[in-house]
Structures are given as structure tokens and as C-alpha cells.
Image (cartoon, rainbow, N blue to C red; front, side):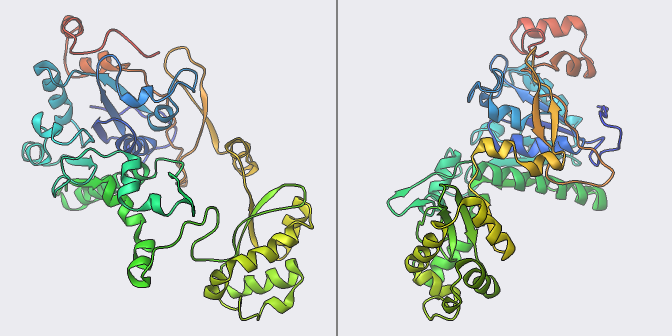
Length: 410
């Protein structure tokens, strides 16, 4: 199927078609990033409700914040893939695709005849990408996995929070990790196919992705005998590293990670050059061991200064620092405004558009794709027509419930 370019510059993945039987976060995040680079992403959704992430909330002009974030620039076709006619259409779509992505429940793809081995035998140039919870083999292959469950299983929850309470990471970190690895895995597979002709299968699990991100505390625990403690907004293995409150109530996080920074903090911010060589604080390990005494000295100095004056002194001393922003503060961040990081993106139906951040990777001479978020089945008729279905056939499929009712998007 031809790809329709929507930007004035050629995008790196223009001409690549991705068919994705996806839901929730991990796989949609991977495919949205492929769409950012120009791939045509055809999202296969259930007739009616579509991807269940559409109903996580209704905060963005009636749309879910997760869905709006993860699904711009895609085309949506509504198909009942459990029906013979719907499954046949899906197979036709896959036959014309370069990449097939799925993150269905364990065993669902196999029951539909969409296992990677089956598809790759039928279509040798097709790159398959499977996103699972705990892998497709092993004792937990059939176990469902959601983000917070994986945070628990990898030990991440035991590292975040205060000494008294474990706390979930505030974003869907396991899903995001898996989506990033699925995205980079597909890019690697496309490069392999382009250079060798071989189309490798890609597989990623939420557990494996977050396990990789847990490697530093894992090494620390295995070789140190105890795991890093939960220390709230402080750092478990670096000090001083945490939030301090200025005289006017402004919260400022500081981070000191080497000896020159430590000396600058003592001499130029604390006014305590005697602390530089104090045996309690002379090394990084010593500062962690005596964190409470160190933090008390720093807190006393912050209590003497208004927030802006404290930040100015820290900046002069070249000590890394940051105000503790709210999400609203972040939305108004001067760096985002000054660097022109916001773009307009459309929503389904008559809903007003939104402001969305540009993708973080900038490619010189390339404008990323920032097309609208689709309604459920919005592109069904167009895609079926491309597959050769006549108007009467499309109406029959609607009547039989194989596809969605007419135009549920704009």
C-alpha cells in the first residue's frame, strides 16, 4: 500500500507500512515513534470501543490522555479479528506490510494463526515484533503483566518511596521501557533487512526491559550484600543529592557528584571550607554514610536564603540544581517555549486540537510527522477500498459487525 507523505521533507521510514494489533501502552508507544519517522501505521482495533486505552480517562477534550499521547499519526481500522472475514482482512493487511506488531494477551496471536513462525514462513520479508509480559517461553509465558506488576516483580517498587512506604513510579515505566526497546528493535530489524535481505523477528517483554533498567541496583545488591535503601527524593548512593527548602519555602534539589563540586559547595555556597577535608565528608562513600549530618548542614544554609538567592549562589558555584516543578510548571517550562518544542495535533471528531511535544530525537533536515489522533475505525473504508473491497462488500461487513459503523472519527 502506498504511503502518503504529510511533511515537506522525506521522512526516514516513508514507504514502510506497519500493521499493529495493539492495545494499552507498550506496543502503541513503539509504533507511534515509527509513525513519527514517516511509517504508515495501520492500527487494528475492536469494533465499538477500540483499544481499551481509549477509556483510561476522558481528560483531553473527552479523549484519554494515554491514547492521545500514544496514537497520533496512525490510521485506525476496526475489525473483529475473531470472525473469519475480519481475520482474512487482517491477513491481507499483514501480507502487504513490512512490519507486524502485536501485544495481545498470551497465546492470542497463536490462536489467530499469527505466530511469528507462521507469518515469517508465509512472508519471508515481514518483520514481526511481539511484545509480551514475561516472554513467550519460560514458566511465566502465559501470565498477564501490567506495568505496576512488573515494577513489583523486578524490585523497582522496593527502591522507590520513603523508608516507611514503597511507591509506584509515577509513569508507566515498564511499558515505556518495552516500547522503546520494541521501537529500536524494529529499526534494527529494518536495517538488517535492508543490508542483508534477512528479516529477523523481534521480541521484547516488559519484564526483560525493566530488568535491564534495574541492572545498577542489581549489581549493587549482589556485590554489596544489601540493596539500596528507599530514601525518598534523595539518592541512595550519592550525597548530597536531594531536596532542600529555602527560607521562602522554595524547594530546590541539588546534586554533587564529584570532588571538585563538593569543594565548590563547601567553599562558595556553605561558606564552610573546613568541611572539604572533614573525614566524615571527604569521599563520596563517607558523605553517604554521614548523610544526615551533611544534609542538616546544607538545610541550615538553605534556611538562611530566599530561593532565588540560593539558586543564584549554586549557579555561580556551578552546582547542579533544579526547582521541584509541578506538572503545570513543566508545561510552562521556558526551555520548551524557547526551543519551540510544541506542535498542534488534531483529535477525533469535532474536539479541539492539542499541543504535543516534538519527538526527542531531532534529525537534521527532517520534520517529524505530527498528524491527528484517529477515531475508532476512522480509516476502515479507505483501507478496505485499498484492499479491493467494493462499496457493497464494505456495507455488508459493517452489517455483519466485522467492521465498525460508518466513520467514527472526524
